[in-house]
Every structure is written in C-alpha cells, then in structure tokens.
Image (cartoon, rainbow, N blue to C red; front, side):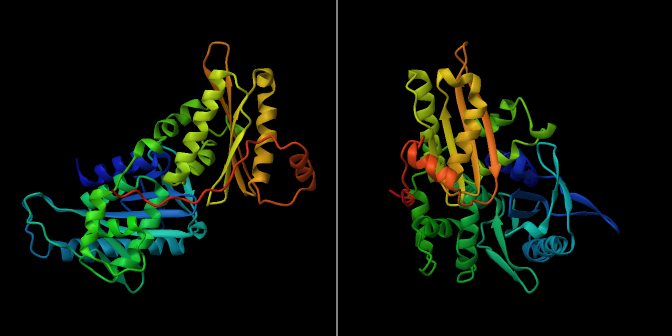
Length: 371
C-alpha cells in the first residue's frame, strides 16, 4: 500500500472519514492547486500532511535533503500561502461530502512532512523538524513513527496536544527519536531537556484502549440518523465533532455514562439524566427515557438539553435520549445546541427547586498510565 493510502487509512480509522480529507485539489485563477496530500480538519483544528516516498531503486544520495527538506517543505509553505490568501477552499472528505474550509476560523494549524523509505535502506537518524522563515516550524516525521504516535495517543485532542509539545522539544534536539519525544510527552515532562532515555516510557505505556474506545458507536452514528435538520444529511456532523474532540479521559467518562443509561433501560430503573462538562466547553447529557415518557421523548430531550447546557455552563451541548421500543430494541434520539451561555433566572429557579440530573462533580484528569 502506497504511503498516501496508508495515511488515509489511519486517518479514516482514527479520525473518521467525516474529518479526513484525501481529495484536496481546488480551483485557482491559474488552474488547479492542491492544499496538501492529506488534511485532518475538525472545527478550528487543522493538520496538513505532505508526503514523500522513496521507491526502491532510486538512489539514496541527497534524497532526504532534496525531496523532504526542500521540495516537501516548499509544498507546506504553499499550503500556508493558500490558507493566508483564500477566504474559502472547497475540499472533499472520505465520506464524499464537500465543505468550504474557511482559514480565518482556524485557531490551531499543524504542518507535517511525512516520509517513507524502503526497508532496504540502512536506518539513519533524520532531522525531526524544519524551520522556515515564512512557515515557522514544520514537523518532519517518518511514516512508521506517525502511525506509532496515532495508535498510541488515539484521540485527535491528544495528538494535537502532542504536536504542540513536540514543536517545543524538537527545537532542542533535531535528531531526537519519535519514541523519546512521545515518552517525554506521556510523562508530562515539558520542562525537562529532551533525553533519548525517554523512549523507555513509550515501551511501558499502558494503552488501555478498551476503557475509552467508542469508535464503533461513532462509525455507526451516520446510519442511526433517520431525520435531518432542514433536510441536510450532514447535520449529524455537529454531534460527531464534539465526540471526536474528546480526549481519552472524557471518552472514558462518556462510555461509563452511556453504560449507566443502557443498564437503566434494561432494569427499568428510571435513572436520572447524567451530564458531563468537558474542558473544551461542551456539555453532554444522556437520558434513559422512562416508559411513560416515550411518546413525549423529544420534548423531554429538548428540555434536558437546555437545562444541561445551563447547569454545566457550556456554550454547546449534545443531548442523547435512549428509549426502549416494544420490540426490545433501543431507540436513540439526538439533539445539539450551540449558543453562548447566559444567565437565566428561570433556569436557576427550576434547578434550585427540582434539579433533574444525577449529581456530578469535576474530576481531575489522571496522568497517563506507565508501568
């Protein structure tokens, strides 16, 4: 499998086809240009990847310097130039949906050059970044290392945090291995000098993916949608976006709450709605709809959504109502609201008199587990 297909497969699996863009050619006055070989774009976060692959039989002499450090980084500079001068760029994701990328709304941009060499090539320590006068720091990563990073950190939120961390560390050691950088990130040692011995932390990292992995649910979400907002088949993206931006701790908490709701439906125990507030400023509420409210579940969902948004002091909120159908299957209804939080005396009074939610607290996020 060629490099572009491998990276597209990893991105599609981890970040979902909705947020993975492999067709990035767009019209310009001169004809057609390409934004990057691959783009991961969610909300205000963009990761642009330019790839270079050395095929078997090509001479090694100066390949890395010419194709990776010169040509690929120039293409990255072109990408940033497009983002600077274009108000809107039309790109297509791996779901086949087209969106207008508006560069002015991006707050976090990471530029990566990913390269691949044939297995017959003797392993060489390669520069892990390139600094451009116009583009700033460009991450330079071997393809196998990028796959390791993605499979270790898993969530887009953590990979973005890692790239921010990496940008500071590699400036201090241009030949530091990727595993040593990941190991230092896992330790949270941002104030320490880089050290190759941190690669051992990578090997001892306990991934525990089963504790927070809900990718099956996220992949099935488009098929669960029966109705759409204003006829837009992409209306579920708003909800999917909030889930894909959760880190592993928040995903674990979401998985626990979803499990509580399913168990309540099975036992008919009438669990009170459960909420969660995220570091990003999004609230979530999961509702086990009592049998007597199934006919009015959408009204219940809307009311709980707005109250959960208020009680978590969130600008955005995702609501999910689960109800048991007569055939024993679970019906899932979803709602989403995006509106700045504001004080509401009526909501304050209602919550003071009859708070419908299961009590919740704010837990400190644990550190990564390293054996």
